[in-house]
Image (cartoon, rainbow, N blue to C red; front, top):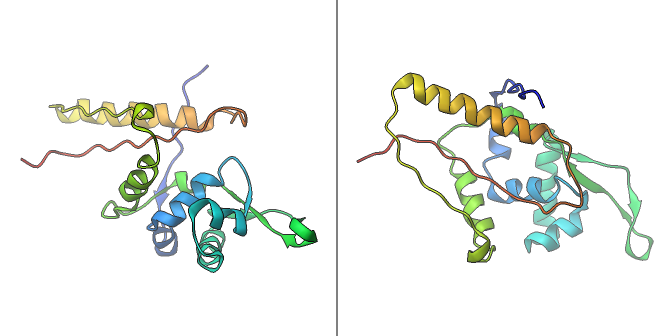
Length: 168
């Protein structure tokens, strides 16, 4: 398989950055990535009030991170709209001061049994050109896996990568 090209990421607009600054909204994007869910299903999965979930869903739809699919008939014939993540959040850079990614990671990993967690921490001392090589290779690897066809029968996994200078 040829190496994946790293898609060019752009800075998020103010509205996009605000939409992605919410732990709840990031979790909605994660649970709707592989399976479209209705507002009621999203609220139940995240233990939210349906009105609260709808507020977050509308924000994500308005910014293009979530899309409404054709309506379907739900329980007792009610009209329901399923929503699916568009994957656009991968294409934008958000301000690095936002802690929502870390908070979302902590909320999600807290629900995973310790035996199923794999955590690694590595301290490095790299000259600038090697640091840039590490960044480039990490982004290329993530891009490659993000562009592979999704197998709906496969187990879902999440990955958080953080690269930062140490403050001693």
